[in-house]
Length: 266
Ligand SMILES: Nc1ncnc2c1ncn2[C@@H]1O[C@H](COP(=O)(O)OP(=O)(O)O)[C@@H](O)[C@H]1O
Ligand SMILES: [Mg+2]
Image (cartoon, rainbow, N blue to C red; front, side):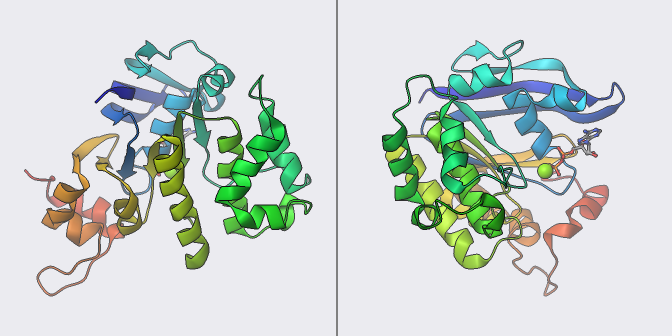
């Protein structure tokens, strides 16, 4: 299977001092959904920003390693050019233009694509997210969190991505909207062949859509494998899926603490 995106052993440093990634590698096969899990601060968002070229906005730098998008090194390619080549990063926190209407938010995103067919593109987004069509004339600022997340993903879809990076799309949303969003993610992948790198806090949810997963700890990959393999791992069950072991329930929040005592699979 061909690979659309490959991250090779990257190190990332912020402000010349804070090392956020320490030799992280991952790859996204064409047409797949790959998920990244890990405790807060483990480096997931940094990985996405390194891929989409947004690190420099925060004075971050890839100090070694490289990233290949369709076999080409992304170093030196500005973020807007990567968008045109089909790499779209949906940032955490659902960044939309709150004062613009839903439809204007979508139309604004079409400028990323020179030969866009506006109505066709809008119809496609509305086919995934009927709620956005119902609210197309409303200001985006009045949408619920879940609807704003739909709009953020819709803006990505308008740009006809080949690869979508999604940073915690379920964060803080009502379960019913989370379901709608994840159904749409599955369809976008299956029907449009968009490869997806999905960062999630909710491991069970991520596992329900992904083919392959990486567990990130302290700026590097601690464990990776197919979802089948990861779901059978007892550490993953205990810390990410909340399945009890030794009769004592613990949570994903304990992961950071846990790693001081025991390395994964050591
Ligand atoms: N703009 C920044 N400046 C300095 N350090 C940062 C910045 N952004 C993130 N970091 C640090 O990099 C590490 C990884 O952060 P991040 O990638 O946001 O983790 P995650 O998304 O997994 O929660 C953390 O230690 C965090 O404090
Ligand atoms: Mg993050």
